[in-house]
Image 1: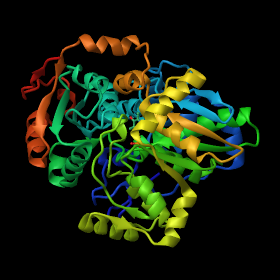
Image 2 (image 1 turned 135 degrees about the horizontal axis):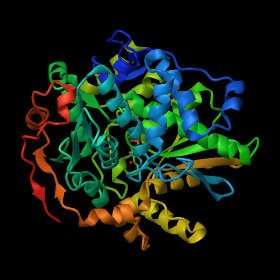
Image 3 (image 1 turned 180 degrees about the vertical axis):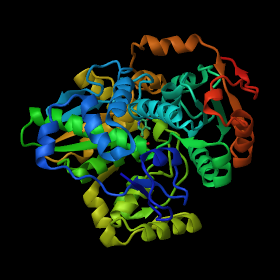
Image 4 (image 1 turned 120 degrees about the vertical axis):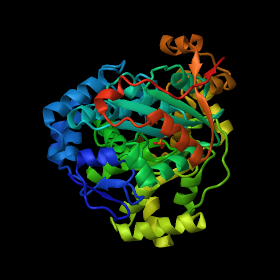
Length: 485
Ligand SMILES: *Cc1c(COP(=O)(O)O)cnc(C)c1O
């Protein structure tokens, strides 16, 4: 399988190169040259596969001969052995027409683990196979950073720097990052929002000389592996729920920020999974909902909410969707993205808007409704939702059509968001792994939200290391400030 850019400006690259390239060299995003199409017979044959084997079948369509099947199988098995549930992503029935797809059984209790355990192992594998240096640079609204660090911590040949918005992630999210003291991990708390962090890393990845000199690799969902690894659970959940409800129409509701998770569902549908509607649920940061409803994609002021991992204005995967909306016409996408950059917004004509509305139903969930949904679901079903999942459930309740069954993606464990659960007036038992974080010392460095300030720190952290074998031995030269409390 080859990968091309949504902006059409690069020659097609193979799987390994696509993983390493992250952001396409022309500033676009990588997408598969062709989307595999699955027949009914194939779907039938895959129905009973374990999560791991289903991932193997799906993923090998995208690696092609870029990765030997036996190696891929070993990577997948290793990645999902860290999950606490034998089914990896089990499905739970909440009511007759609402199921939850629990995606939080990985090491950091959020769905990001599903893709980042695999990507972490893949990076380490590629580093060993090719002798390449892997220096990861990522931005996080909270969960990606923790999951990426958990995915590569202690692995040979890999160093990681994570930017996150100071004071805008939950306590547990911060602790999961800052209590990791591996010398291959650098946490940078920036004085800004997640959008600032994402803009900075896109700038640094866009500076090809800098990217090349420091071997920068991506773990954000600009990396296509993130998306591909998330396709599996749409199939897996669909098979489970369809089995219990023969002939039913099945929709998904997805708490959305950067649009990576929902976009994976969109690809699953394009590949032939017969899902019905895809519901796009946001919190008060509703740029995508406004786009679906009004055809205009225009960032608004940042709103702090109870679901910080979705406090995002500019959704990077949106560009991948535009690519498919416009029939894989890269020239058109490039034009739209140029307009977005020049004017600060973009809009699509009303005929296209109808197609968008055929692809997605969308709902923005106000802060209070999020808390009310947590309270209500607990009192009716004795199930404690985290605030992100609550947005998806609230949207499903509003958008549900008669006779339709919805699978709402449960993207995080409530213990990660104790602040919101307390505000909803509920108590919870916190898993021991999370409880333990509170007693540990933290390490982080603060930085202004500018490209230069971050580049300076990366120059020290990633230094001149060019030999993957040495990387692991290397001593960190940059001082990291211990932060108490
Ligand atoms: C990242 C995240 C989301 C949003 O996923 P996107 O792929 O960015 O749309 C939702 N919920 C939780 C808990 C997350 O960590």
